[in-house]
Structure formats: structure tokens, C-alpha cells
Amino acid sequence: MTLERVSYTLDSTLDSVNKAEQTAEALAAKMPFEEEDCHRIAMAVREAAVNAVLHGNAYDPKKKMTVSFVNTGDSLVIKISDQGRGLRDEDIPDPLAEENLLKQSGRGIFLIRSFMDEVKIRHLEPGTEITLVKHIGHSGTATEERQ
Amino acid sequence: MTMKATSRRVDGVTILDLSGRITLGEGSVVLRDQIRDLLGKSEKKILLNLGDVTYIDSSGIGELVSAFTTVRNQGGELKLLNLTKKVHDLLQITKLYTVFDVKDDEASAVKAFTR
Image (cartoon, rainbow over all chains, first blue to last red; front, side):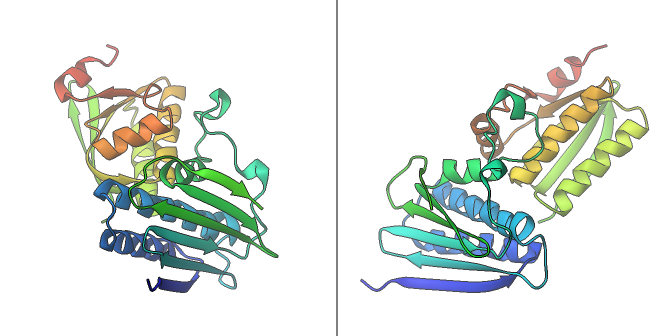
């Protein structure tokens, strides 16, 4: 079958975060996902886009966020990349740990992993690329791969 | 849809009726400002009615946590009312459901505040 692919290069703004989220929800809704999965995909994309724009590119107008969506027929594959300083391990605390439970931030990656089936984080020079995969007819939390 | 907040007083408790999205940017700022204003007026018994909140992202969750700890640190109480299924599920996933005092009936929620 023919792959359906959509990609955008976006400014580091909250409007771009909203566009990525809305595009994800619209594309997921065209695929045979449950409504709940559409919501989860959109939320995972929002969280990844916030990470790219806020934590990665730090709203720098010279830095861009790239978002691509591929409908493979049995999955939706989303890649989001930034041109920031790169995601470090200390940027990904365990939000369920007792000492982190009442922290204001640090739940984005956790929610992404909770909502998607596969999550891969790849270091770029410079920046970070995160790949999110949701399979049709599969519910579960993500397997993780870091490169 | 951006977030809207209106407040009312019932038996010494301030009920904040929130609607829309609590997300990074405007929604989170509105909530933060509302809590700060209430504490500035010494209104420290706060019930957040989330019945019409359609969406919360991780930033919004963080803002709820911040509101909870800020109110508590000033000797007040903050409770949540009328969670939608999506918000309920988010609080379950993040283990915050047991941190917040969550109610589903306004009258009993108001009575539950310390007198």
C-alpha cells in the first residue's frame, strides 16, 4: 500500500505545538483508532512538541521544529525533532518517585511513553528526535529505545 | 478553546469553576493567577470544579500540583471536584489521584473542608 506522509517545519512557538497536536488528532481520526487512542496520540504529540519548542529550542526564533506523520497502514509513526541542546538523562526524571510526585514539571516523556506503543529518542547534532508509534488495534505502553 | 475561570463562595469555601483547556500558556497562567488572587484575599479554602475542563496537558497537571502545594503551604486546603474521565485517568496514571482530595459532589465537598 502507499504510505501517507505529512511533514512540517515549524517555528518554535506555542502555535506550532497546537498545530502539531491538531494535525495528529485529525490524522489519527482518519485511521481506525478508537476515539480514546486518537486523544492519546494527540496528547503524546503535544507533549513531544512542547519538549521540542520549550525545552529543546527554548522558543529561539532561529531554531525550528520538524514534525512528520506517516500512516503505514497498520500504524501511525510520528517524528518530532528540534535543534536544541539535546535531551539529557537528567531531563527525564521518574515522575512517580516519591520525591518527584509534587514537582511541577517532568511528566511529559512519562505521558508519551504511557500513551504510545513505541517511543525512540535519538540524539542529533544538534538536537533531539523523538519517534512515536501507535499501532492499530494494539493498546499498551511503550517499549523504549534510546540512541 | 482557552480556559475560563469564575469564582463563587459557598459556606466559606471559594469554588473556582474552570472550563476549557488547562495547557501550557494561557490556561496554566489563568489558573496560577486565580490561585494567587484568592490567596491574596486570604481565601484559602479552594474547591476547583473541573467538570467543564476538556483537556489538561502535563503543564496543566503541574499547575494543579503547584496550586495544591502553594495553598497548603499557606495553611489552606485545595480540593478537586467533578473530574472528567480523561482528567481522572491522567491523575491515576501520574499517581496524583491519591495526592489530591477528589470529590464528585459539590455539597459534600464543601462540607469536607476543615472548619
